Image 1 (cartoon, rainbow, N blue to C red):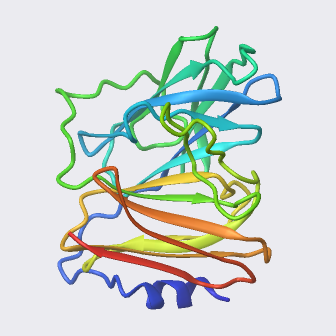
Image 2 (image 1 turned 45 degrees about the horizontal axis):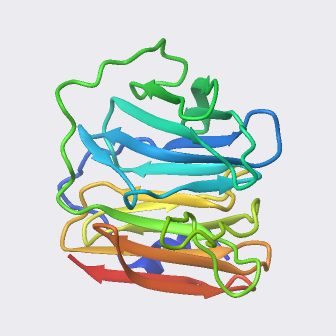
Length: 249
């Protein structure tokens, strides 16, 4: 299945006004010394907006957990906090920010409750830190797509105190896809780092939010569409089946 077909099927289109195109920004989080790590996301910053997940969300992973900003303008920043694992083991996390698959800055937590911030101004290899001007505001609509591969029938990229049994599924399942709105689409080409689990934030979508995802290894994939932290749609499937999600804004 070609990447071109995914873009066409998404129905997002492109704008005739030639809007600016910004790099995909990726934040990779993993256990610094191997094993399993738990962490929380304070915020991701792009387009002078702050992107967050459900309050109290806790992420746990034994692989690489990636967060993405799609269509956001620089400068960028991501702040993550090391949390306690279920077996009360302190597992430092390593956080890396990448621009166009090129690492720009990495940081490692020093213990439970420690937070680290990684920053970039949009050019791989640019010295840091980068000053984020003013106080980032909340976007008009906080749209995100959560991607995971269920161990059994379902998965969730995060757990909360009210649902502590949620798991992020099988790590390392490759996939591809696209997302956008009525005027712009963002292609997600398959590469070595685009693996489950992943969380995508779509910057300032207009009128609607659309996404199409597909596993490329025949493994089971689940995608959830959230608007302002409210679940709008869940799709799952395998064998390179296209998972289509859409909501009006």
